Image 1 (cartoon, rainbow, N blue to C red):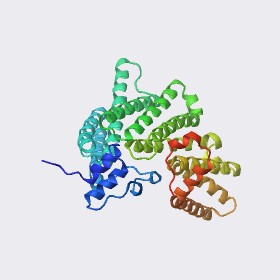
Image 2 (image 1 turned 90 degrees about the vertical axis):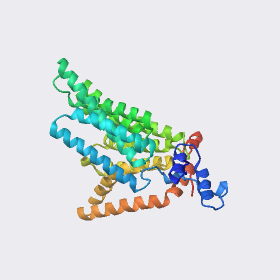
Image 3 (image 1 turned 135 degrees about the vertical axis):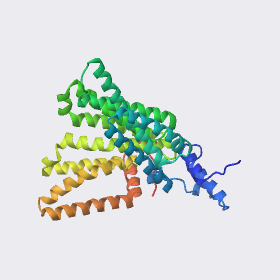
Image 4 (image 1 turned 60 degrees about the horizontal axis):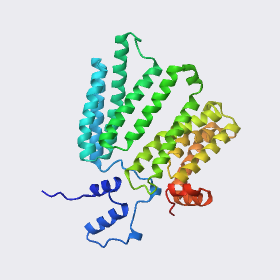
Length: 356
């Protein structure tokens, strides 16, 4: 029996690089019985929109709710019956089985993401539980330390996500692997020298964030038009790297947020502006979103120096709202101006082209 090609199949073909966005537009026009638009006028996906697949329909949300209910049930049973490793292993089996249906066969984006997280989370618990039992049995230690727990869970999470990626190739799996490895590095550092890790935590987070950020930029460079699944991989890596970089670099350069002065507040805003420029060039908004909190704290501090606290909070929120809306409305023009003004050289071919 023949099967008809639906819109989701065409979208999947674009995401996997089988056809281009331009070809998809022309196919839809042909199926609708209208003349296909000329190649130079087709509505190809604009990289400036920073699209990624999350919800294809309400069925995605419905399935995701079912998965969350399953996770809640397994967590509740493990807490009640006291067998976390067993229920985590059952969670891995359930996530893998459901991924075969919803991620591999039906290609539902949101359920695939939820199942990826579920499988990796359960993998981290299993790795920690097995290692803890082995340590107790061999008399190495009664219970892993906090740093060792981070390391074991991070390794287990990364390995589980790598296995899930090998089978199902869900874009978020790469970011989960990176996050797991980052946790493992932090845990290993704490296990080796807990005091050094505590004293140099911002530096360590900045280094890890920079590595993940560079990996994200490299992935984006292989698909500057943002038409393949690699674009989604880059999106999730940026979403992981941005808060690490922003939090770590703000703490590294300006100290805790509750110790701001006028000079430090201005410095935080300058750093936010630098992140904004990088976001414009790369056409990734994650850095800006992550920096909004610190920018708000800095603006609020400067306003509180001359205004009442209640008024300064309201004006800060108003200013941030105006900034976000202005950037959203003028993003393309600002990108075009930034790309024209900056001497990017050969790097220009690896960033999305600007459109006005």
